[in-house]
Length: 77
Ligand SMILES: [Zn+2]
Image (tube, rainbow, N blue to C red; front, side, top):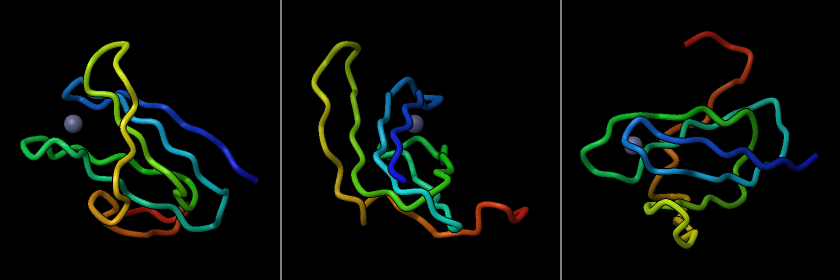
């Protein structure tokens, strides 16, 4: 089952991820170099978009640049 999740990073950038439900999740690193925030997606990310300006255009990110790890959704880190 596919889903879409939108979140706002601590640095103010908005992200939108299209993902397929899975027993494994992914940690997505913020694309802002100075920002260390990670966001956990509870599935396999298919596409990821970033919006750096409010009401601005969504730009697609290259997944390999921002996916830092795959992890079990149910596990504690
Ligand atoms: Zn950030």
